[in-house]
Length: 215
Image 1 (spheres, rainbow, N blue to C red):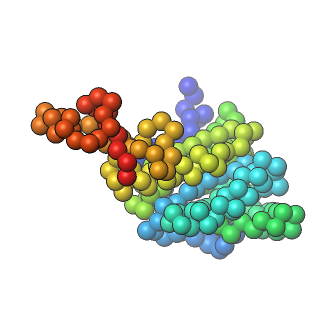
Image 2 (tube, helix red, strand yellow):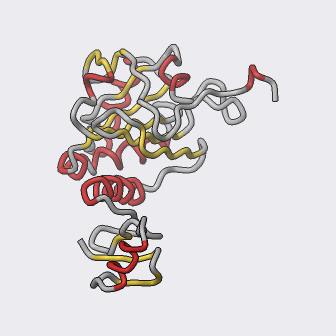
């Protein structure tokens, strides 16, 4: 592979790259913006495009949900601040939906490059549909990537956020298709004594290494 075509991407477990940028709510320093909260940073290919409009509207319509989950939203595209403001105004006029969260004007592509949102095989000038889940310690916990022509699934974004927060709070793991209210997986035993204790517990035992409980 030609090194010039390689894209650097932050990984799960990395600290979120910091940056300063102009947004639709004013200038921000990312590390200060995300302080003490969960954050979802998401990119879209361009303003005034149909799929992006549905996605951004979807985030805006779920603003209350994310507020309740102590989660800040911040969008990005490789457009100017003037294009962003015009698009926000256009969507509000046509649909009544207001994008209250900041949208980064990444006209120089600096933030997109830091986060691996520019993927040359898809486009060299438009960010793919990336979603970064960042915890209150500024650590990247989950990453989703979608191509330019496929919109994201808002239910999955919400489910994944709740799963991450629940796993952290209760020190558990989530099984396939887990949703809030479902049983969770407890960590496997690390000693024979723990295994014996588990067998005599009220956990839902599939086997000694796979046990579930309600929380």
